[in-house]
Image (cartoon, rainbow, N blue to C red; front, side, top):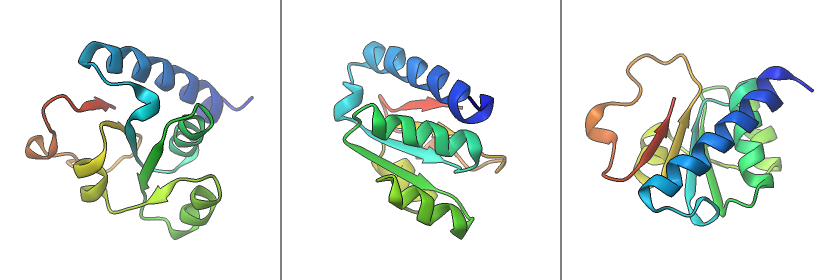
Amino acid sequence: MHDDVHGTAVVVLSAAIVACRQVGIELREATVGQLGLGAAGFGIAGLMVDGGVDRVLASDPDEEAHDRAREKGIEIREASEVMAKADVVVATTGWPGLIEPDMVREGQVIRP
């Protein structure tokens, strides 16, 4: 068990389930966006795929993270596209100011 990968992923998945219920989204049918594919981000995105989420999009500037994510069934996109298409967005990145208020849609779930 790796705390950043597994522990964080389980907690975020649980929080996403609760948040989706509050806004009327079925998580399995949602598009989930992951900003950042470090240890925690990859763990979260991977658990979303393993948990049956229909579509997981991710953005990370590190090209090496892309191949590992694709092998897991995670689609690589630009951050702006992740924000535009995802019903649920999880941000595990140190990019300050990455999510601007005008990028957030009504009913979209954002999990920092």
